[in-house]
Image (cartoon, rainbow, N blue to C red; front, side, top):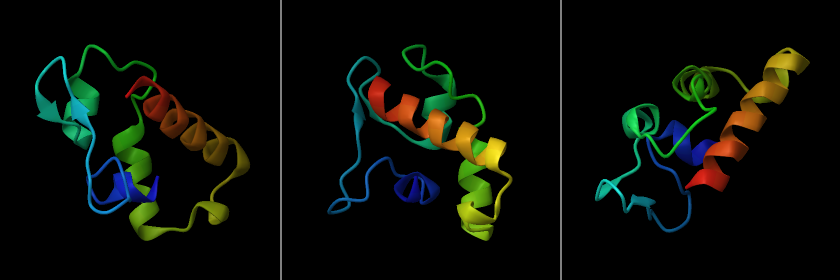
Length: 77
């Protein structure tokens, strides 16, 4: 989740994930446009909010939805 807030999908060594179907790096925009990714419609909102507020300060339900969507994104990439 932290990596995604910097418009990256990985926090390890600055590496990003590649969408091989579309031959481009996954960015927040591509996640929303890619036909291979589903169930991550609110990723942009969650990523933006993570920049300004710690996730433990969120309401429990919204925190669980954010974690679920980031987990789905990781699995689908």
